[in-house]
Length: 247
Ligand SMILES: O=C[C@H](O)COP(=O)(O)O
Image (cartoon, rainbow, N blue to C red):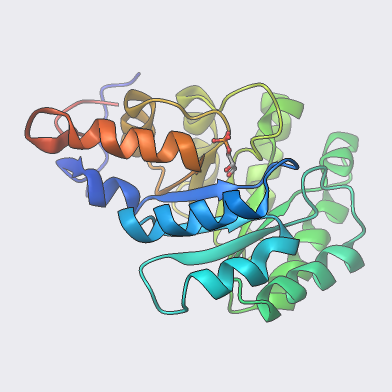
């Protein structure tokens, strides 16, 4: 890692601060109603910034987590392939907002990005941005499918699209997002959009490295997120050191 330390970094994160950076999720095909109820209970207990479920469970989650509480609710669009038509993605996004979602995470069209059809990719994203404005949109690149050049191209499009975040993964691929991936994305987007790291994030060390690099939001499944918050609370002084260590 470089020796640079970003300005404005927190000196450290305590458990509640860490939870305030994490979208916890139950977004796998096998997640059941009881998993959504557990997600809502855990979100309220630990103060996670957001809780995400698949679209059909958003109404249930909305009924469990009142609007205006510490935890926002969110759902995915065009998930997990990104290959849905733009018309379908825009309609799905509007439906999520109508059902109570306060954030939407859409999948980029991976096939069009890999085909070099960047105009399509941008129009696809802009249509969803406009369909749900002012609700913030995150755009998932799904790094496991992309070369470094495609990651740069996708991140650049997201940065200019009106989306609020570029997001790294769905959690549906075996590979994990790494600090090296984050450095590539941050070097591409600068401060134009926020960065949400998600997909296979499993340690406090990785989280600390990514915060140092500029990540302001994480997506982590419920079980792992709770475990990481508890690990943070068990550290000396209940603190995960951030700014004192170079990225
Ligand atoms: O945001 C995407 C998923 O929540 C990441 O899930 P995961 O922690 O199981 O990889």
